[in-house]
Image (tube, rainbow, N blue to C red; front, side, top):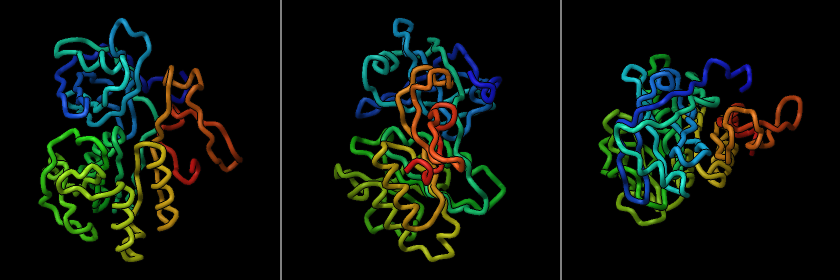
Amino acid sequence: MTNANRGTIFLEDALVLHQTAYDGDQFVLRVEAPKCAARAEPGSFVHLTCDPAIPMRRPLSIMRADAQAGWIEILYKVMGPGLQALAARKAGERISTLGPIGRPFTAHPERPRALLIGGGVGIPPMIFLADRLRARQDADWKPLVLMGSEIPFPFRARPSRIVVAGIPDGSIACMPLLDEWGVASRLASRADFPGCFDGFVTELADRWLELLSPAGLAEVEIFACGPTPMLQAAAKLARRFNVPCQVSLEEFMACAVGGCAGCTVPVQTPEGPAMKRVCVDGPVFDAYTVF
């Protein structure tokens, strides 16, 4: 573990509080991990032992954290035997949890019109960031969360009660939790789900951005997490509209604490090109430096 992360990443024998299954082999897992919950930030993740018989841990983004109650929530989709084993874990069992890990998103008060774009398993950090922004008092935050998925969303979508100027007519489906928080959200899919924008989530973002005035664009910052093609599209959007953009990269990880350097990616720095570790130098990077 590098010095920069010493004393900030904790190993906990976390208690499974409950686990909820959704369509598309998706699960929301809540575990009691008070040290991680107290220090988790939007964009950080945990490295879990899915089952005692499977030695390799799995890195999973944190979707929500309650520092007072001491729990964190994780949304994941079953892919492979490790996450299949994690899906079988029951309330009352213990899971070895290492976290929080990684550099989080940084929202700047001078750009309060935060555009949060999540695709697939990249949705969780956007929910976490929206939760934190609604609690901040340092600016008049107006987050808009756009989520895309080609499989059923891990919640029961419903028509939003929040009007969002610039969103195409008919695109009314939202995430109920965000609506209850007073945070605007809209859904995009090419799977013909009711109320969803018919297209990629970055296309929906494009529609919204192009109708903003220059003064409105000056308040926008993009935050994105999802598959690499989606992140590339988000970075392209940011360049087109000349707004800042932060992206959370997805990469295979072994140790997840900077020791093995197996998750390195090329990044442009003031000193020139460099290889950076997604686990501890990221996972959040300035989109302009990686795309």
